[in-house]
Length: 416
Image (tube, rainbow, N blue to C red):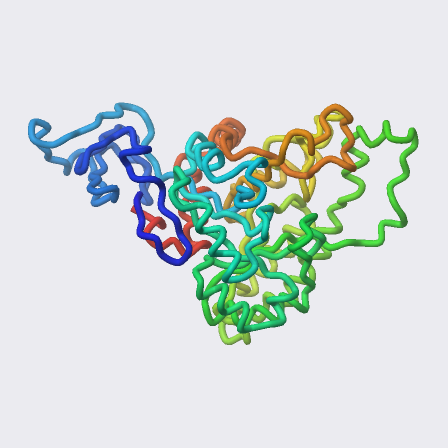
């Protein structure tokens, strides 16, 4: 879908550059079209890059001699995925990824819209000025639709006018870290900073996405029994990021989320917890907050649903991310929560780097860059692992299209 450049949202390259179907007005027909009302046999009408109508087979009367019809037979026609959590690292670290390669990977993975995180680009997107640099870097270099989150950091959290300028410049919402981010110009925020920012977000009716972990006193550093060799064990890394870090952060957040209820001091604001890994106490806290009427949602990622800590080979730092992949029993609980609707949506948390930063030769989990590069695999990974649980096309569309669109305020993409 080609959109005008509005609110920091960059459309994909013109259809002549990236579309397999160069027609101006045409129909796509299929026996399996995924709609908000279920999967139907019928056709989708498209004109000038926009969906005009979706018609069931029994109501579709088109003369194919005068109208272009592309028949996909039994192939599934469904909404493109919307990934609300991707790091494309552009400008400043395009050797890690970059808009051209990242958006091509997105298209390969079924993602037709993504929202880029305010870090790990250089500089981070924390002001009106740095957003302009991000937009300039993206223009004419993207192959799917791209929007941007801004960063909530102590400097702008304590300066309402600075935060308002960033929101006025067009970011779709804000992202903050409650632990050190690993990026120097993106410092962590405390619960106090978040509380300070919520009334401003409420006025703009835009969400705050939060990396919900906090540092805890873990009784000293992890002991390396055999020197550096033990750092090759995933279990060593897992001990440094226990589920209690997520639980403690979410405990702090739900003391603030009560203000987002109807009549609260931050009514209109919304808290969204990114990449939930702990499916036990942390998830229960979120469920309870929702039941009380707090405006709060949560996502998890395919790597938490596909892998288990017990199966990660020694030294394979490709699996390092934060929060970490946890045990197999936790993975099953994540699936249960997703299927029951307690987890609202999915995202990739695509966080690439140059290969050298993963320290693949050393296999040191404690020193390697933490981030999983997965944007191109989100559709096959979700579908392949989800089939064991009987997931449907409609659920895929909800987790990857409808609910992410609502979070990011992409109203033209919420439904057909």
